[in-house]
Image 1 (tube, rainbow, N blue to C red):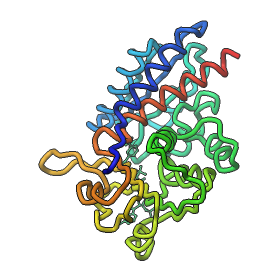
Image 2 (cartoon, rainbow, N blue to C red; image 1 turned 90 degrees about the vertical axis):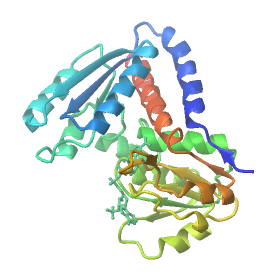
Image 3 (tube, protein in one colour; image 1 turned 180 degrees about the vertical axis):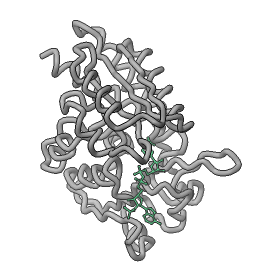
Image 4 (tube, rainbow, N blue to C red; image 1 turned 60 degrees about the horizontal axis):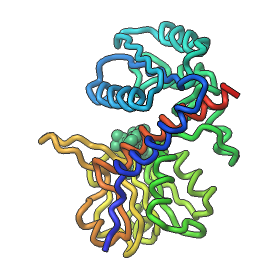
Length: 279
Ligand code: NAP
């Protein structure tokens, strides 16, 4: 019988715990979210993050900039937040408009306020195996794997996708948990064969039902990071859920799997930044 990894319930447990911890701080953690433009998906994510932050009693600030905002204007907002003592965590919602360098904006965020874990300092520390702030989605996936009860040590894992925000840090975390990790991407040959032999499958591709259910090895743990909106309005993951669930020992649903954990880990990172900054 497959175990459905309920990210919504697990995220609620984490945020309940955080609410208790937050009340013991001398001042509430502060989270600032910068939204550039009016991408509908980004608006939904940002709203949800704000709601959770407020429920936790965090100070929450949202800064909306038009899609036409210049890189210099965005950097000026980041500079101002870096210097704001009430703000512990800064998040610039991605994707940014094409005329703006994501790397330059990420690198402007003070590493000690890097709630998303996307700065070069945070990724560098993770890649050296001494993580400080870990990117929220891969961190949430690690918590879901813990929840699955699987012992990762020595397992064959595949991560499909190698983005800086999901696939690459995910592969590093699995390798640091002693998995043997294959990273697949758009130039990989025969991903099916790699998935068929993998005991842990993390799909972060951004293509609806890219991983066929029949590829899943009997008893594998399957984590579906993908969130794809179909023309009929349905939200589906990167894995063909029903047939995969018949073969897997544990699987995340979409929605209600990785998504809520990403937000919970953002709160966790902001809380930890506040604790560090308060000494
Ligand atoms: P991304 O930056 O577009 O990266 C996608 C990765 O998939 C790239 O490494 C790309 O390879 C690879 N890829 C694309 N087509 C492929 C193919 N046909 N075969 C094999 N690999 C292929 O996306 P992302 O930001 O990592 O996000 C991935 C997915 O996760 C999206 O659906 C996104 O919406 C979702 N997401 C969910 C959450 C959450 O909280 N649930 C958070 C973040 C992202 P190349 O490197 O070769 O181009």
